[in-house]
Length: 152
Image (cartoon, rainbow, N blue to C red; front, side):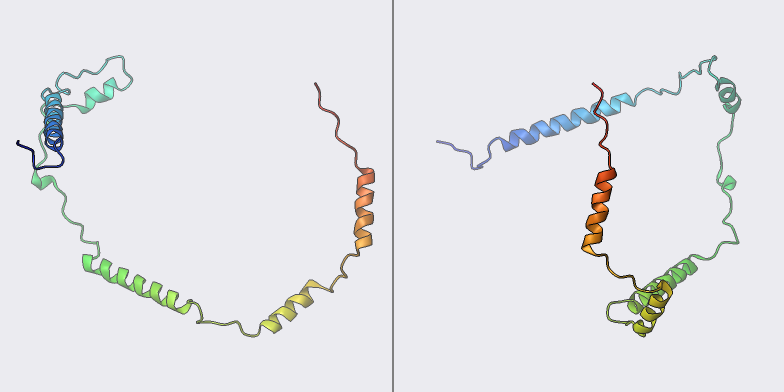
């Protein structure tokens, strides 16, 4: 008896089907590129841009040459200087991170600052008494009117 040595017998058929599908897809995509859609393209004369299209299209226009490529500007800094400035910015960023890391600074004279803020805020007010709060809530409930019932 002859038995296949592979445990995955259907694997070869799946690969063959995938290759066939891929090649069919490539052929279909390439077949779509056979014609030139711009060759027969016409602009609708009723279109609002028809005059501008006709003015901008020249059948006898020449192709650009290498001489038509502009020269490199002279007032641009060299490439190496960009890297040097980037390195300087990275160095400054590392210095800021190191200067503001945890444990690198402490607050000093915080009591003096707190006293100045307290004196600018004015005198301390006594805390509200529970009886005053209850009386205020009772007065608000007495003056409150319920909303009208919804219209049906």
